[in-house]
Image (cartoon, rainbow, N blue to C red; front, side, top):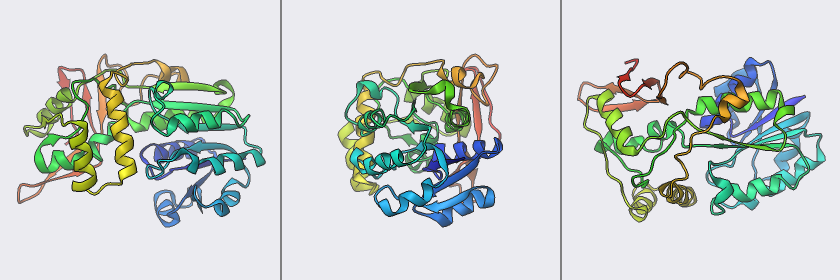
Length: 312
């Protein structure tokens, strides 16, 4: 039987797919941009058209599928947009659903993930909710613009701490659950890194690695929202969800450190093993002749507070 991966081109979905391929699972990846999926995975998977808002695309991707990885697309802020697909799952021999949720969502009804979790729990299909902390890829992705252009981190997290985790590690854990779901039925796991850091800490780390003075501006929630919607022209629904998340972060919901990754995989965090205090960031800085910087997704590792390494 096959495993359906939604959001396969996303931060976590790519790693889930790659790990399942290594496990010799038959994988179907569904998305609105089939060409992009084929470019990412080639002939190693079956790439099909899929859209949560188009029920006509449901049956084709579910043919022969018995396990599903579910990720809410960022632009779908209404949880009910996913409900028709979830209901359709009851027509197929689905034996497990893994949903990529949010850390602390069990105590936060504002983001759409809360209602999606509750809907999944009504389907009478075994499930696992994965509730990760903030991705380190946020630094090299959505927030890299301000770092690159203004030498600042523009995140409305106040003085709070966050236990960042690498999306690669999340993907690895999810792949293990989908490969052998029997021990993970009807459970929720909170996946975190090994250390909680403030964004002042992150600014210091980035400054050390890039030899530039990176500062944390600590914007208000309102200023962040206005800048990302009106200045950067990002999707309003997406920005509103992030505002809710950072509001909860200010209340201390993102600083928790758990052992759930090891419970799932039997391993320490991938790429960070045998260190006491570590964190992974995907970031590479390339200097051009004109002195500007371009941020690319590559790897540098930060290990122990007194020992920081990079590959560039």
